[in-house]
Length: 497
Ligand code: COM
Image 1 (cartoon, rainbow, N blue to C red):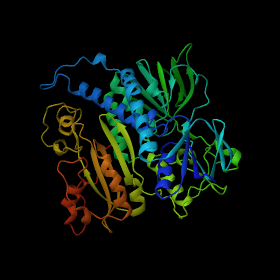
Image 2 (image 1 turned 60 degrees about the vertical axis):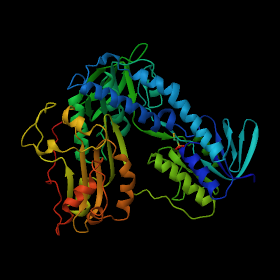
Image 3 (image 1 turned 90 degrees about the vertical axis):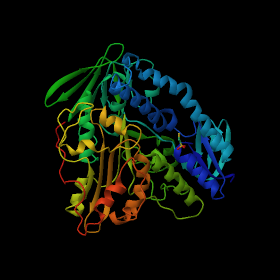
């Protein structure tokens, strides 16, 4: 055989897997039709990062315009379509070149460009030539799941894939699906003078901590982003393009006029190319794999989104790495514990890892919270005003560029920090934050959770004050207590959004 493994798809999983196999001394080949790095820089992670920066800028301009010494800004020029255009012109191309250069030149991985056809588990045909490998790794990614409703094909109906392609600025957008993608898109589009409504069949962000959800939805309410939960979308109406969305809510028919629809109800794995090999396919169209990313067909592996959820970049890349190790003769297994999650909600971001407070209470009983802010918040706080007696007002929570600006000029939008501790063992069981810049810390916090990190160990670390999440200093304030009481009063913020 010419290659140790043929990586069918050079997305995050294929690229990292091939690199790892090469590092281990193996000989990989990547077959890729479109882009190395998959959808990441075309329309997913990298694009979202850019677009949320643009949305943050738009939102900050709106918040600060004319306040203090900030100039008055004409907000009518804010344009989501212009932001997308810039990304198409520069971002997509720059990333594509970087991925190609890093993979082929720096890492020296062989890539064959073209639409591959799987002949059998040891042979792939590309541009009329047959390539042979001892192993085959399927990394064909996923696609947006689409509801089977009338009007779904109307122009103006988008998914995350079409988002960078937008050429005009919608005035009213309906987002179908209030999961991580839908809520993130709502927060990203609203700053661009777009009236956004989210329609969710069940519950928005069901897996997120209640305080984080409340923060986001309270913020949405203030910004005029509407959310309907328990609503069933029946039809998208329009003649030449989308004009409204029709849904059933509490037994009544409702119609939401709009000129754009974003569908975000989930993902479907692209498992089809592997079906002729006889691999088992699950109910969600995913290729079924074991902990070592092996399918039921010996020598055939599946990695990334093609193998089903969780759909995270880290999981895709790590599946590639685990498959590479097993191809190289190790017995490596995936570990799905303590995977952090993240949503851009410009100008802030929400991040979490570990248990929510509700999950922690169920598992450990009376948990301790280390949380700011706490207590009451003035109703409808005004910018640049001090409210005596509201202790939560004075605490900057998010620690990057906007911290104090958002507190002073940005409607007291100072974020939320929350660590959950099991008081018996003094170990953390979950971390949550809304702020700006904290996501970097969560990559390492996830490891600390895994190794059973305690409040006492955290108190020994060195913080750089101000920082994005405050977990070290807040923990140190309580770590002297023999019987941990936590820092914040253990009260829920009310569901008053
Ligand atoms: C990043 C894509 S744009 S990858 O995960 O580095 O391949």
